[in-house]
Length: 162
Image 1 (tube, rainbow, N blue to C red):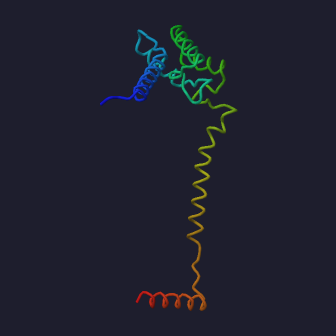
Image 2: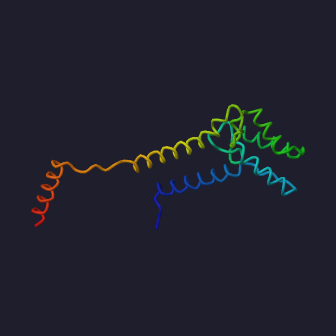
Image 3: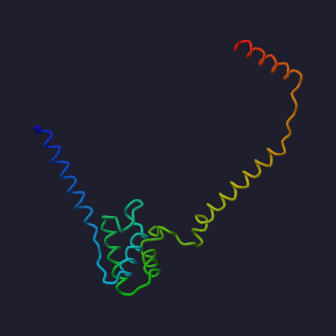
């Protein structure tokens, strides 16, 4: 099957785009650590830090220069023997709390942590109140006028179906 010139161009463009994507994927540097525990700490830390430039992307998967600098700083601080908390504190102080995927509980974030629990409790109270109100509702008997109307509707329905 012979390909037309247009088809060949499309194939070449697709192959070029695929190769650029693979080059972009390899642009994110993979650090080498002798100690597997330190390598795991590096992976955990870079996965738990958000890139300040990118939307909802961790620094371990971001191609931005800021994320590369942050990865470099994490690796350097790990080699210096810093604790994970020290590294996270440094990044939060330098770039703001935004870089932490799991914000800390403090005066500014208490609402963020308390609101889901309050909504669950509030929703439970609404459901309980609704169920209680339905249990205590009385069923009133039909009036004579309503009975007559119901009887005529049932009678009319039977006549049509026969």
